[in-house]
Image 1 (cartoon, rainbow, N blue to C red):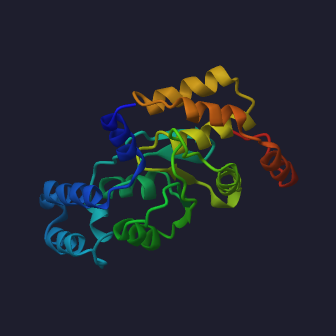
Image 2: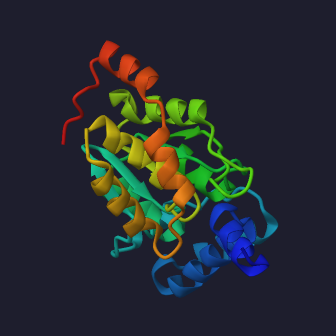
Length: 230
């Protein structure tokens, strides 16, 4: 495997706070006519890395509802996507009416996202995992089970699952949800590859196939979570 390919894989897995802030800044500037004077306050806060008291208030003025990249319903009130940004907040709050967000990255959650969640009364769960990458990095099964328990708990729904790009770690978690739905591996891998394209990982698909789901099945049956309902 070439060094360039490894670098590209790392970019998919590792959350880049500078890239996140840059995209937020560009969004604020592009919507300056709608949001008005609050743009300058928010942009200075983003550049300084500090809280902004006006971060959430302008979004009621925006008419466009923009879902995050790689967004899709999974089942019932469980959703998946890439890392949400400022332009997605109105969609998450007003359209999905989220109760919870489960993030699968180990990096610190950005302050602008925390401000939005706190302002909107949305609970954050974080189960930080590295991606499946050769030769020695693998998803830990116990953390995947912990993530499944959070997602399947009805009290946490509607819930959004996301990692950085919404491809690999999110794909593994959704693949394990599909196993609880008794999907065939052919169907599970087809869905995984559609969201991970063009960087599907054989190790992710192997993980989904080999994941020991006995513990989560026992918990789910005890709490009457199964069968999962559309």
